[in-house]
Length: 286
Image 1: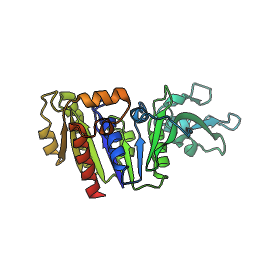
Image 2 (image 1 turned 90 degrees about the vertical axis):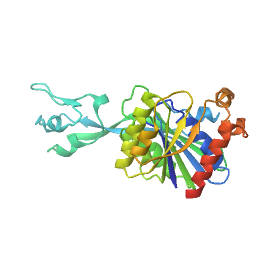
Image 3 (image 1 turned 30 degrees about the vertical axis):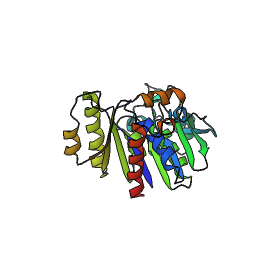
């Protein structure tokens, strides 16, 4: 079973919720937590562990054999990313950071082997064993790299290759293809928001995406007592369901400092009890 914790806006606490749910559910189920927030992965920090078993993520990059290139310009004309340029009487020139690795240039080239396979490093994935029942797969984008999708996809593939009862994904903020890649095929999607204007605005964006993907959303309102923006109308509009409202908590802040998930830091506290209720609800659909 695949579960995803997401939320259009960054900083709403989705990683906190994802890591604590993973800890709770791993008490009964073989669980793989997937940190797909490749621009800022911090699940390993919240779990006080290290990144291990590094694997590189590469993206296709065209390599031109100028002895075979006829300078027809088809590769430049068909590059959807405008990553290729060609000056008068010159050869195609690649701007690597713009290249998406789609291979269109190679497909349209009429000369065999004029465009060869090359690759560039775009990120890394890691596999850390937290306990017998809990594994963490982390995707990390290379510094300065703009394209997150290939690294998210690589993290997803690596995670899904691990036999488990439950794969729990923690996504990036936003609603781009990097988020859709993590959400796809989820049985349960939990959208984490906060009661601010920006939080509600981005909640609507993610609920709209889930509607297009035909996925039902559960909504968690974190720090619900810190703002006054009305999130209930948006939730109702997209036929989602609010399953929890979590208050501001000193326990959560102290758990951050100590590097211990709040469900272990204060297992009898209010926030831990709410998270246990959410875990129990997930178990009902397992």
